[in-house]
Image: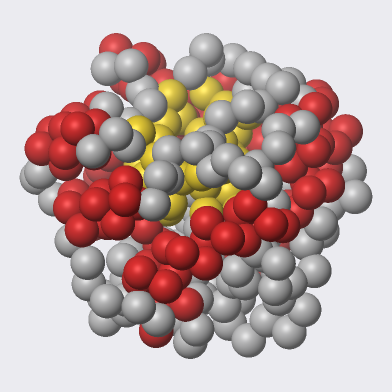
Length: 286
Ligand code: ZN
């Protein structure tokens, strides 16, 4: 396992950690300020959300590169199924493709996919997962042409109804195997997988070819808001070292992306403080 105690070159900031992915939260730093703040502290990369990029993908990608930062990824695809997905199949496909184009413009190698919840009119996960497989397969062909890889992120089962019918690494590996595209893999997020006692075995099944990303935060034992009360690494009950060990044993050696949604704590702080604490915790407890 890599030793991060004196080296945080593998650290990437997901800008959600500064509250940028929602209106009215965070200090409102521009992408350029985020790039400068991360570069000044020696971060290796940054992951943006679509709403921050607008029509400036190419310029922001170049800005990051010239500051010495990788744009490690882009969040995220539209929901592909379920009650929060765009209104019809064509709208879903078009928005999926424009998210892929944005990733390509940024030169982000990975676009994260959050698949969406249970399709209206159906019950349980199976029918929705079948639809997801069809829509992802179509997008993989499109993404292949512009050099973007797609990372399916299984979410914690608590989001199963509206945000993600994909709730286990096991089902995500099955989905990758069913679609069988060379540019489809997984993003493993501590928040969503920390509880899974079968995680190491499923990561081994995935292997290095399927693990595209690793996201860090912590699970607070008293979670007050299931979406917006993630913990900073070290403040919760997730076995961060154990999970990273399993991810790296399976062959992953890419960036570790810190993604802390925290409307009542970290989003209220000065981003300079947040960026400093992320580096300290990354070195000390991850
Ligand atoms: Zn994540």
